[in-house]
Image (cartoon, rainbow, N blue to C red; front, top):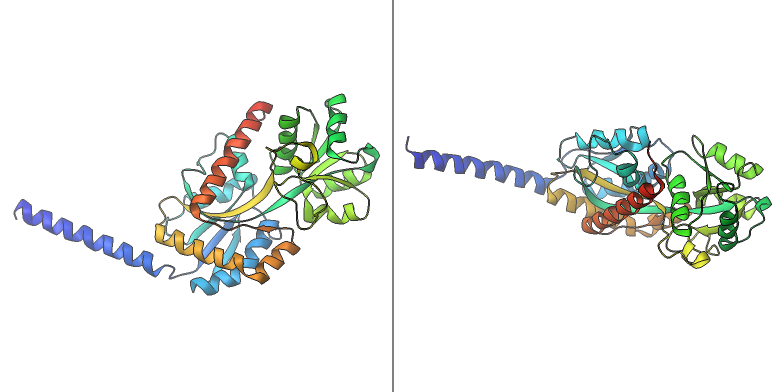
Length: 324
């Protein structure tokens, strides 16, 4: 057989493979899609995804389900997805924890910015900085002034080392040049109890969780940690409004990623379905009731948000000398 004939056969074979791959991408999806979450059932991310599942399943013509693989700050779930086929059938529910972990846990066996590709940002939940009334401050400027006068004496509770509540405090330390005393807990339930009792002075906690205590006068809300006010607490100022900290933004965001190499047609089809689901009035109303701000947007916009978040937390974590 001549070299020309062998080359022609090879070219035809490659063309056939390409045609099959293209057809598969165009027909996507042809089987159920799994969304892997690194946190347990009932978490805010779980609630958010379950709001979208019926609409996504209808739009894509296949069942979309959520599975939970909790542990290690969602690193177990992330690694599972990284090692899954890049075919669009196994997705990762990423959160702000993953951009924090990128620096906080430097020895991870994967790189979130290289081994996973963005699909769409789903939404975000801001924290409120709340304090016990016994602290004697009523606004953020007073809180910062008190912390400056008492370095390492004003305590703040967090739901654990390296969590967003922890990073929210470190970001305030970094931008306001103060030093709060970090008191980590294993989860938020005991942390809230100790702040309510006055054993700990402050807490950065999701607005939907803590708002009833604020409305009852048991805690004082000083500021919301997002760049815009929360629809659930419209009278609480942002950090920028309350103390002139324009760089301050710390919200728990949720978005979907896929293994690197996933066909772009699949990414685009998923992104369109998600954006359509997020724009529905009933979806937005349900999200507002949970304190979740709807997001949406393109894969490229989500990629830029991940890059910005990763760089911000790297700067804060490095400056504070934090490590696991």
